Image 1 (cartoon, rainbow, N blue to C red):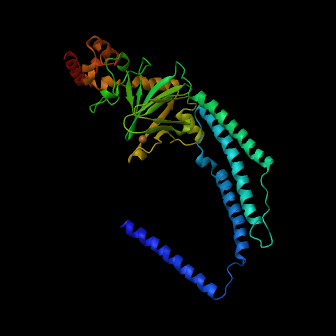
Image 2 (image 1 turned 90 degrees about the horizontal axis):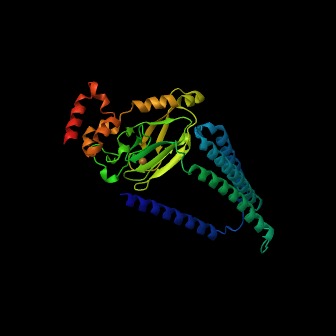
Image 3 (image 1 turned 45 degrees about the horizontal axis):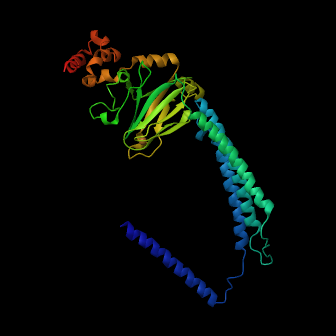
Length: 364
Ligand SMILES: [Cu+2]
């Protein structure tokens, strides 16, 4: 059907073209001179100037009047630096763009067709060539080297006391894995990923994995370096935290990372924006399938105390998935129960049933 419609549209254009051609031939037969330039030439030249003024005018009007609509407040240390670089680049390109546009349209107007004017010919001009080679070369070098310096700083190794969090992307959700009290993420192996619960592919023969916990909300401490270790389980995704100027692809089979330091808590940002409903957000910035639009995660930036409290309130993954105790080597089982917080929960009632399963799985 669409092929027939497409052919129909093409046919209509061919017919229109033929009608125009016939009209022109009729005009020639009647003795009309198509080489004579009428007033339309001057009108078109003037319209170019009108177009230039209108479009450049609306470009600047939009850019300044709606500035706050398309710029997000920044809430990270490196974000201020990259924002600075961004605006320097923007200034250079806007100046170049404006000069080129204005000159181009003025030339169109000034050198509109004139029967009495002949084009001037000259072979070359060394000064002109030098100017338009050296000036852009210097400007571009400065932009590239300042950018490279900032990039090297951002991608340098994270400090030892950085808060390490793993972000896992999959169609169509983000999951975060926190290291727990030992501050070290447990080992994982993609071959251990299963459908029953081991979504991280946690390697339970590693002691570091016992206290790891899962979160569907990304909690971050303010004023402390955060190192995101990023991976994907199926296709390309991208971790995008716009307020922190963080963006890094999540690539299947190739772990990536990004370090940054949040500078404003969620509450501080709410106060700053005067919006009590504001929340930070993590979005997927890589078209990853039909559910891409819904692939986001709430982000909470807390002060150190609230953050520590939240962390302490989270249950270890092993505690929530006690069936997996059977994968813990026998000599580590007791330690695992303590580290995962399973043993301490003995007195409380809701955990009784899981407790039984754990004990059962443990003896097998
Ligand atoms: Cu995605």
